[in-house]
Image (cartoon, rainbow, N blue to C red):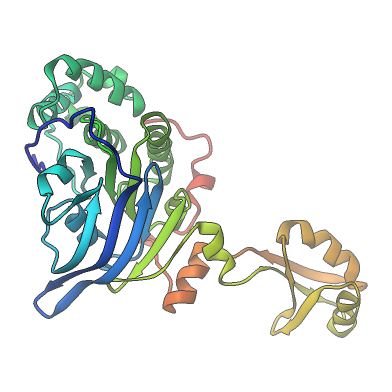
Length: 339
């Protein structure tokens, strides 16, 4: 079983800072390899913040530095108001961490795994039972409390790891690729649990992911590639930065349609496949554009910028989902059951 430290439970009277995470010119080198290249960002208390990027982009390395598992080469970072280089013990008292790799003891029950963690982190004895009950409720595993983890599905084990990360009431919960390798239905259900943690416990969530759908949960997203942050903002602002919604049409007479649409006030350009109108809301604009074209419309394609478009815009390439998965996990998770 892996743990990041044996530290004491945080004192209840410690004053929380306004920023949960603050990073300035953070750099990590391994010989000639620059894994993280002078990045700057901050995370507000109670925020869900995502690092979005492909494998090898520097996401996990950054988390390791913030969680004091790797020494920074240069720069400065604070977590919970504490410097990760000079106040490592204080940082560890205020964080929870869910690793990419499974770190549960499968020969123990869920409760036994949590009790072991409580001992390691010095959770006061009179609070242990209440905290175990609470975190199992948050991840909907109360009815499996006494079951061996070896009987759990992969998704259930992941949810238990998230519960374990919350047991000692951290200020910041770091989730390193929290749903990698899980099916879309289970990923969506885990995100229900994460949202509940944020709302009911007030914890700051810092996650890394290469799943576009997963990043949409975050209030802000930092796109990281080759160790550098190339864009950081809300999902809506990032998507707006690469263009407006569009409606593409192919008509029986594109010349006539172009004139009619421009007369109706639309900004329209010729494209290889016909005409493209730039609009504020692609869904609402489809009907009016078809009506305003004035000629028979053969095909209509509406498009709203996505995070795929954002990543492609800033990096010149796409993030390919593992195992070729490209379908929205929310669409495929309709009617999913916990498991």
